[in-house]
Image (cartoon, rainbow, N blue to C red; front, side, top):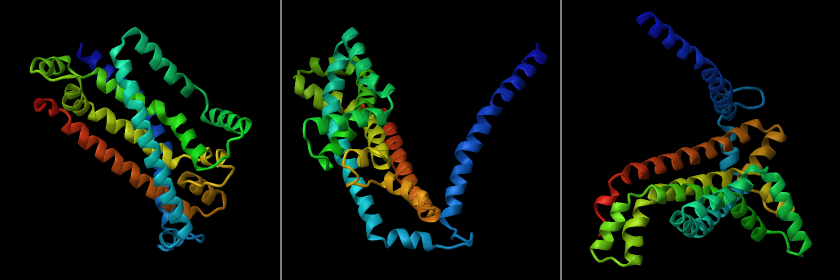
Length: 266
């Protein structure tokens, strides 16, 4: 028996090797290359010039600011639209599952196809392409990423908290504001992270829906690498990585604090 368990343990460890190899080749190695290129010039000498070029370039900082603006506005709109939808879907069982599937269904189609279709509709009805159409495209593409975590968080709320609030005389609005909303903070933070980070890092959507008039951070990174400016592109990638790490830290912080939030409803 011991020999069998030992053999089984070895077999499990062998099955993990492809995963480890995949992580090394497609996660660790690219990150190391990004860090290396950020501190190298074209002759592969150590330098901080790439950081200086980025942080002193008005165009790069403008693109970063524009991306943050689009990311914040898109996230706020998705939250305003997504929370009521997620709340309503959580109240209906069978119909709610079907509606969630309908929201997920567009995600199975490549985002470029959806974006091109959206652009064709705008051009057909005579809508001028610009910031408004870019924001619409962002909300259209990333709204499901807000609805899904919100729906999961609301459905996972212990119904005893809601019943206790009603027993204490709370009306519908008080139950929502004092019980449901605080207990769904983890879903809110997950949704914000899942919308904000892809929005500021995406490329192609802004260019297609603005006819190349609006550049976001992801577009700028892609442009730098296509122009063989690997050092500056790597610095911009590190800036994007910093946003991802900060967002992940904030989300984990809220998730930990949300464990005992139901103990104080009033």
